[in-house]
Length: 190
Picture: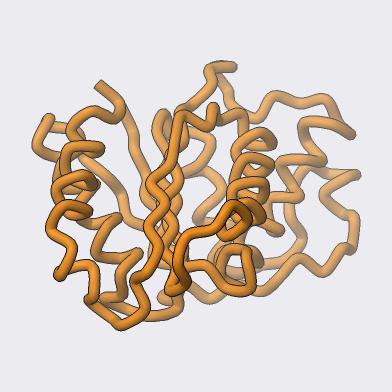
């Protein structure tokens, strides 16, 4: 089992980081190792829409994403976490997702498999927001992550959507969320 966790927040130690780390602790309690990908620590550019991937199946932009793509091809479990900005995922996470246009090109233009073994991985989404939960608060981010997972042959198996978490670390005041995150991790990928 190869599980990866994508930290999509620009802010270190924020609520989405805390919840994702707690889920990871639950997963690791089952003896499963999780590789962390912290977007704010990577050097990568947004997709430049050069369309080279439609011809070659490879991204022409040479940056840290070149090290990331092979990790996703081998992953059997994928966690993605982001705070909500303007009803969507963070700019860092959106730019990261857009760089998977290369996988879309492989899959739909070149008709190449996304994964060598042809298996589908499992994906889980964690989102935090400052506002009080409403019907539309997480809708945009869920659509984005579901689309991302679909392109990389990953089944969207669920999410943990947490609202009213404005201040950095305010999730510590909601111990029930931390327990839910740990229990969620214990139940994932087993």
